[in-house]
Length: 439
Ligand code: FES
Ligand code: FE
Image 1: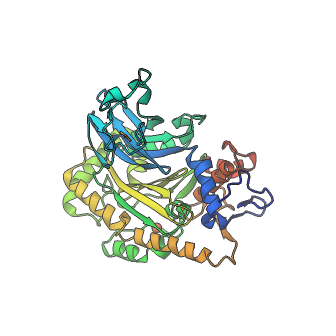
Image 2: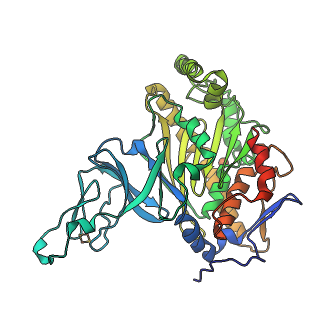
Image 3: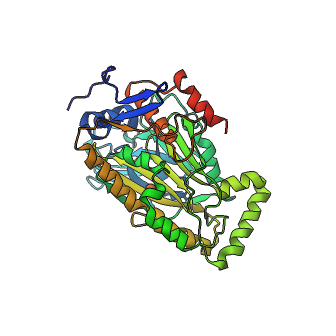
C-alpha cells in the first residue's frame, strides 16, 4: 500500500462548486485503501478525538479502557482525583496493561512480567529488580500520557503533540450544542452504564453523513413513523428546522419543537403518570433559562456531528456514538446513552426504553440505517457511477434539516486535512457559513 501525501490536485475527491451549487464526493473516498490509510495519518493522528465522558470515571481509581483513533488507551481517575489518559501499552515490552473495559483500580499490573503502574501512571513495582543495572530508573518507565482535555464533561484526546488548537478552539461552534446538552441537569449528566458495541460493513463516513441526514427520515424509517403515529405522537415534520455549519468540520441539525422528549416535553406517546414529573421539570427549566431558551433545550431535537467521528443525537433520548474506521469498508460503532444524573427513576426507565426502541442497534431506526449504509457500500462496488451528490440546500441562505449542509461542512474539513491544510475557512465558503450563522 502506498501513501501519497498529496493527492493529485487535478483529480480531487471533493468537488465543491459554489457557482453551479454542486457538491460531489468521489466514491473512492469510501472504497479506496490508500484513502483509508491517509485518513489515519492526516485526520485520526491529528485531530482532537472523543474518548468518553467524565461520569464514566466518577471516583478516584475509576478507569475505562477503549480504542480511540485505532489506539488502545486507558482513561484513569488517579487517587489524586485527576483524570489522565495513558497509552494502554506496557513500557517494558508492550502488552496491554489493562484488559478490562471498565473498573476500579489503585494500580495496573501488566500480565506479562508483572510490572505495576499506579493509577497516576507511575511505575511502582518491578519484580526481581536486581536484574537491572544502576542506570535503570523506574521514573523513566511511567506510562506514556496523552494530551487530553474535557469540555462540559466530554473528554477528548489528541495524539498530535503539535495540535495547535486547545480543545475549546477545536470544538468551535459545537460548544453551543454541548452546552445545550450539559445544561439539561443542574447536577451534571452521566453515561448510563453499559455500551452497545456493533458495526457495519461500510465506510465510517457513511454513518457520519447518515446521522445528520434528516432527508431520509420519513423514507427509510417508515415503520417508526407509523409506530409513533399509532401512539398519537407527531413524528418529525417533513419540512422545517435548520442545518448549521459550526466550523472546523462540525455541524448540526435542529428540528422544530413538538417532538416527544422524556426530559421536559410530554406527549401522548408517554404514560399519563409521568406527565406531572415531566411538566415540573419543564417549569424548572423556564425558571433557570427563561421560556425561549428553555424551549430550545427541552423541546427541540438535535443531531450534532463533531469532526471527525463523534455523533450526539439529542432527541427522544441522548445517544453518544463514536464511529471508528476499520479499513475502507468496515466500521465499529460504540453507543452509550447520556442522561441527567438526578433524573426521576420512572423517567429514566422511559428514556432507556425509547433509547432502545429507536436508537439502539435493535431499535426501529438503527437497523434501517446500518442496512442502508451497507447498501451504499455495495452500490459503490459497481464503480460505474463516480460521484455521490451532497448539494441539497446550497441554493438556500438558511438550509433546512432535510438539506445536506452539516455533511458538506464535514467533507470540507476532511478535504482540507487530507490536503495538509490546518483547517481555516476558505473565503469562498463564507457565504454559506454566514447564512447559517445568522440564526
Ligand atoms: Fe509488561 Fe513485561 S511487557 S511487564
Ligand atoms: Fe436514520
